[in-house]
Image (tube, rainbow, N blue to C red; front, side, top):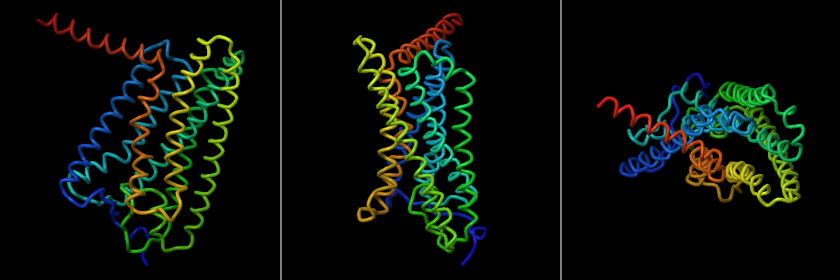
Length: 318
């Protein structure tokens, strides 16, 4: 038996055994990563530059895009590097950092998705109180609370997880460092303490999910009472993207954490964790902008201004 201080590195699970498949995975990951950077970056830039988008809804959307960038940047670059260089190792400090950051971004995103559902509920069900309940100060406080919750959660879990003694085996059945995989290496019964924290976290996450679902039940009831078809369509256009993001996030999380042990395997766990950690940050920007005409219009305007400004600059240089 050895404690965690004697382990200098961990071995991550590879996506394939053959070198050609490693390179194929690298280019696939690179394409997904660049798409996530571009999509989330465009949303952040558009909201920051367009003053008429400085509203609570787009403020929270900007925060969600930042969390998406942080989440995918925590796991995918290391997986890309290992695939390119045909390696599996990650340093002890790197594993600690990866676990901390991934837990931080995931929990902060769950908290922020819950806040966004509250924002939509107040906007549609209590429009007369929207200005007082969701003032600029209140929105900032909510965002800080979401980021702070993620920080405290990840700090608590990371400190508790890496305080446990580990076996000599340092191989993880995952392509990044996550709490359940680290706990499997523990040679101490004190890991039940961290398992208890995971159970509490699951209940809190379930509470957020219930809050979101109840909010949307009330929202849809209110929307269906709107006499104007145009008004109903506008209300649905602001709610459906968020509901789609929540559904994508929750469904992948359920498959990862609540799948029956009988169908569990290292390959399946690898694919499901990839879907949870990589797919949502890459797909979310498309979902956000798919039905949001205001955001799409502002994005086209920003791109056009940038393109024509550069074109005028080139003409002036000539």
